[in-house]
Length: 109
Image (cartoon, rainbow, N blue to C red):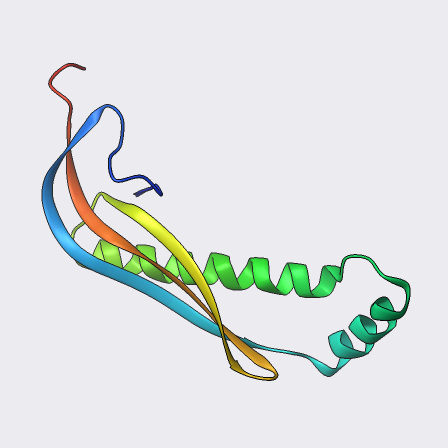
């Protein structure tokens, strides 16, 4: 599965639009992470536990988007975007979405 943020993929032409696909996950804070984050706020710097948590959440959302695209028979997802929104003071949703397509090699290749 090819995943791109552009509306096209060099070397390919879009054969068929399969439609909108998406994947999401909701991540909540963890008491242990919150304690460490509070300490980090006193001295400054990156809160690596949260960075890692959000990275894993993005990967999970992208994986679910890919599964949605595969269920539609897509070869690729174009125009991919990621969004994060606050669900509550202790939880965030991460959503990946785009347009599922099938591809043909470009005639010039």
